Image (spheres, helix red, strand yellow):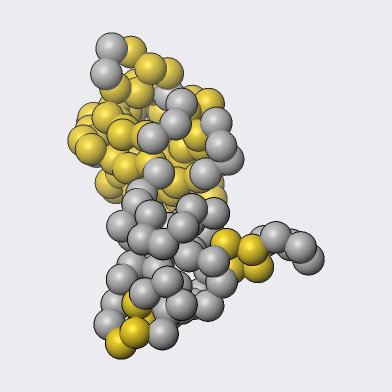
Length: 160
């Protein structure tokens, strides 16, 4: 919990507003810090919780899905270039259809400056899917972001 104006931390569940500024948060105008402290537990609080998306712990810089149109059983090459303040310990992709998680996932591994992996479509029914990346850093911050959509078609000779 740093002093003003350096500030505190970004809390994913902080719902406070930023309408005031200053060390006492009593001067009209926004300053990027919540007007009310964030209560961490019964004894600890963050007096200057960061508000908004000023600090994104993990972000997707570039992404690629190939092919975007596949047949059941094909594999999708996934590449994601990520920027993270702290070391990433888990990076994976999952398929979602109509907002529900589908079967199968792929772990992505760091290769040069990007995370790469192969997503199998063998467990998917024909249809359109969103491929969602999930990443977690060494401090526990998590990111979930859609990388794009793929269409999975039935193989020739099989009903769709």
